[in-house]
Length: 70
Image 1 (cartoon, rainbow, N blue to C red):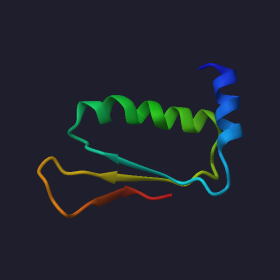
Image 2 (image 1 turned 90 degrees about the horizontal axis):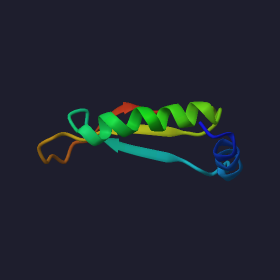
Image 3 (image 1 turned 120 degrees about the horizontal axis):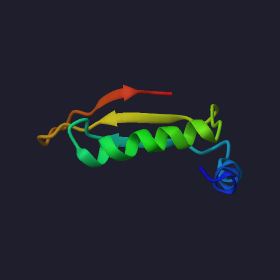
């Protein structure tokens, strides 16, 4: 991973930043991209960055399950 990218990312992370990730465990895009996103956040050592992961069901529903809340 490019160090200049990580340094730029670290500089952009502010104390008021919060990220919500909506994903489907059934979705190929989620399965492909969410692990990469987690790796980037870990590499940026963004331990103080709250990231919440929400599971979206395949069939439309008003219920959203929280997979992991930071």
